[in-house]
Each structure stands twice: as structure tokens, then as C-alpha cells.
Image (cartoon, rainbow, N blue to C red; front, side, top):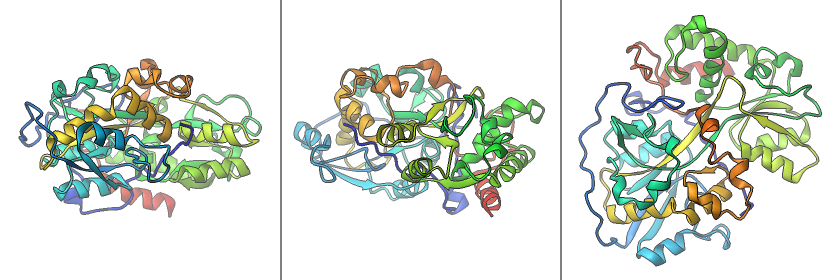
Length: 400
């Protein structure tokens, strides 16, 4: 499939702090359990029975297509035919919305990003996952398993689905050389004043923190999502300096496509699907790279509700959606790397997995996956870190 889809992945809205900021995951390749916190005890399934005939899930747009949007794009109907589980999909527009919807207990599962997963785990809204009941889990990419964003103490809370990096993108016709550092959008951004683009979300503060982690070691940043007040202020100061060079803060990827095609933006943070869309459909050609400082990114996980009314159907869905064929279809349609290693054999575009670095563990190691900042520092340094509510406030100050 050649129709890429990437939706808004931001948690801009400030919900009640008590319900919103529960926990966060670490980044990069760190393993689970560094915070020492224990989630509420929730029973884990030990077997799967017959399907209950129905399944209610929350998903990012494009993750559970049933042919309604495009009759050629349908992997839900085959699942229903195989299992008897009718799938009812609620599209989630932001991670915050997904967290709140899961708290209602009306849904059996969710495709959660890393800035929502541990909030759900520590909130007791999802159950630990018995991976032995999900045969296709065995061939999921190892680097997506037992991460701080989807497990606690070595216990998985979900099945990895898809992932990607926030890359540096530029128009080589208008940007000299081949940038290999985020300095292109920060300290060197003045070269392209008014034509730098940046992601529109408080979580983008982590991009500045990641750059400072590599270039200002005296700040002592060990994890871009675990910032003390001093470290947060340093990242905010960098972003305030950047603002004068920014042409547009984007959340809808089609807006960035249009900005580069029109020339109003020439360098900035992007997703690989954006570059592919531009290069495949316009005279403008762009290039991308994961800079030497690394990159932030996302890793989505299918999680089962602790209050699931149709747990058998949900387990069947988790196994099905990461099967080679289904995972390949979703990845190509959505525009991300599949979590399933065997999916690469089933993509219609045989170069797809190479383009998205699907099997490249070294590439994945450079990514610091999105997480929700909290007071208890995820890098284990203490409980004096800034939480997401503070990041939201700072982001509002940055944008003015």
C-alpha cells in the first residue's frame, strides 16, 4: 500500500495534573525498572478462551482499517472472519485523550504511544501481558521488548506494534552541505532564519534536551525526559532562541509537506513518511538523517485494559495485528517501521523495511522514545525532576 498516514501524536492539552502525570518511561535502549516503582497489582491472563464476539479498542487513525475509508485497505474484516470478534474502533487523536478514554473502562485495549504507556500502567488501567499467549510476539524486534516505555521490572505490558524516529530533514537545494547535527535547527538555525520548522508539542522540549545532553555535558542531563528545573530552563532557553528562526510549528504532517514543497521551510524535525511523501510527489527533493546526537521517536504498543470485557478477543487481536501480513499492511499504510521482523517479507514495496530501518538495531539504538516527564526522575537520579504540567507551561511560554 502506498497511502502513508501519520496523525497528530501530541499531548498538548493540559488535563488534571493528578490524573495526567503518573509515570514515564526511559529512552534509548535502557531496560525497565530503573525507577523502582511498582504498578498496582492487576491480574494477568493465563489462557485464552473462545472469542466473546466483540472488541472495543482505541487506536491511532490508520491502525485498525476496516475498508470504510478505502475498500482496498482492510485488515479488520479478515480478523473478524477468523475469530468472530467484531471490532469497534474509537480513533484517539492524542495520547492524553487515549489515557482518559481508557480510564472509563469502556474499552478492551489501546494502541498507546510511549508518552502514554506508563501512565496507563501505573494508573492501573492496563494489565500485564502474558506474551506466551501471543505466538507472534516471538518474532517481534528484540530492541522493542522490555523497554522502559512498555514494561516494568521485566514484565511486558503490551505488544510492540510500530516505531520510528524524529529525523532531521532538509532541502539540499537550499541548505548547504549535509547536516549531521541538530545544531542545524538550533545554534546554526540563523542561517535559515524564518525557514526552520519544529514539532508542535511540549514533548519537543526533549529534542532540545537531547541536543544539550550531547553538547553541554556540564548540565548533567542523562535522559532527555528527566530534567531538573535548571536543565529544563536550559532547554527552554535554547528553544526560545530557536523561535525567531522558526517558520512554522507543525503537528499535522501534511502541513510540513506543504511547507517544504512551497519553500517556506527548508530544514527541521520530520518523520520519514514526510520525506517519502515529498520525494515521491513533487519537484522538491529532501534528505533525512538521524543526527550524531541521536533522536527522539515513538514506539507504539497494543495494551489490554485491566477492565476488558472481551479479553479473549483482545488477545486474539494483539496476536493478529502483529502477524507478518497484518503488521506489514499497517506499517505501509501508516508510514512507520513494523515491529514484526517477518513483516518485511510481506510488504508490497520490497524496499520498505530498508527505507524505515525496520530491522536495524543500531539505528533503533539512537532513538530516545517518547515518554511523559514526571517528578520522580526516570534516570534514577532522584525525585527532583520536572513533570509534564511544567513542560506544558514552558511550551506555552516558548510559543508566546
